[in-house]
Length: 214
Image 1 (tube, one colour):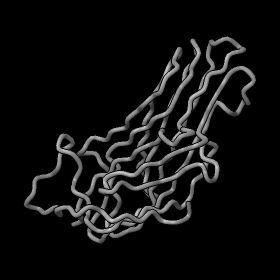
Image 2 (cartoon, helix red, strand yellow):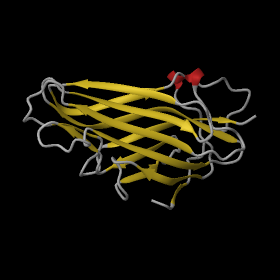
Image 3 (cartoon, rainbow, N blue to C red):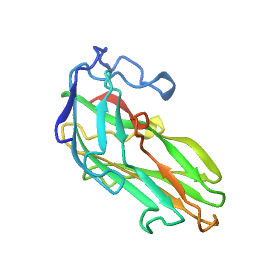
Image 4 (spheres, rainbow, N blue to C red):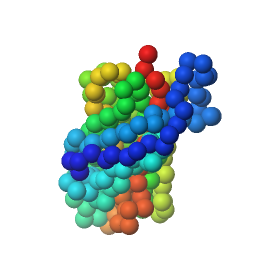
């Protein structure tokens, strides 16, 4: 986890002032053609014990994926009283070629939920650059009965994207959380929610938007 993930980006045309601004409907801004390095500075939280979260960068440098293997919250029955909430804070060092900066345009979360009738759950995420006063929070509620895979997407309006400061190395923080509330379910029943997978198929994908620095 301490090492950087280094991938060569696909050769893409650089943005110029002559080109119109990219809109959400037309996809992401072209990423820089050079190498991008994402290093995991720290991974902390009850939902991502050491060695249970992995980060990989897409070949075209427009996204990175976090895969969890031990991210589960549960409530009810004989569950530990503290097990109703699990969280994971990722502190990432994103090294991009000179003259470019990036923002998180959207994030896709996936997992599995087994919620009894009367129970509920919430998936929550917050995003911020180190040293920045701006923090964006997103919440997604779920209600029982539910026994299925779940998916949630956080999207940021194109005009409201918060880009990393140009020419300054600022670590990017992502804090995710899942909570399960037993509610009115039967006392002997257990409800749970995961953001993990034993086979590695469940993952979180963060989509990047790019622009040239002035």
